[in-house]
Image (cartoon, rainbow, N blue to C red):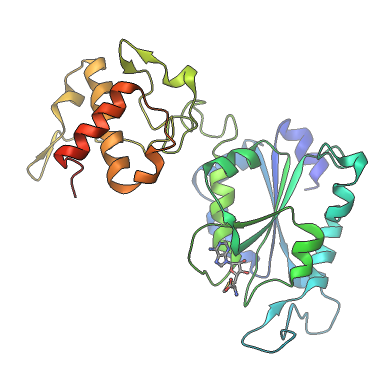
Length: 297
Ligand code: SAM
């Protein structure tokens, strides 16, 4: 299906283009859960493009030996450039030319071309929010030793790493980016608030404002990690659900959840606390938790 058709169908659809030598990799991922529903609902469109389809030799060669010698192979520039050209993606220099300085291309699309790479800037929820506001996100999946750097130089406006470790290919990283960005698109999760109230949810005063000294937020909005969740039965192998959650007292539930968020963030991601939007009372609570060594595990 062409891009125009998709955009017409979806209104505010975000289109993902994935460039890969393993298109089959994505099949199962796209057929299940939220990704599948978002596509069927016309909220996102996904194009997976096999780089071998953009080769011109008999062997459909996508890789070659590195200049300067050394281990492994490198993904060649030509098939990638042809694929990007076929998608109507202009080289970065043209996208950044004065007439496009607003970030709008001739077509009017707001877009980003992303190289997945362990050498990239760290991917996080803030980057995901930026990408979710665009109309097209193109994900370039490397393999072997990586992608000929000229593709990065000529076409990519972002180089993104999903973590400080090395995967065998960019496909897993592309799936991670697509999934994270897609859930932030209004309508995809059904409940507009749900992604704002998760771990790493943006600090938002309208969400987080205090109500009688207790944050209105039930979840991780404000940069904290989410609190623990429980469902029935009330007791499982001798471990009971915390009484506050079964008390029916909404204030007590909120207070317990916020305290648990603080504990968990302190235990697993103390770095996040420095940036989190906390009330004075919460800062004192953090101090108490630290002093009492109450973070558990
Ligand atoms: N030679 C590269 C290095 O040492 O930085 C590693 C290349 S890796 C084996 C092959 C491909 O996997 C990369 O080109 C990239 O597309 C992808 N990849 C590996 N780790 C990644 C990460 N942490 N984040 C995003 N992509 C990654």
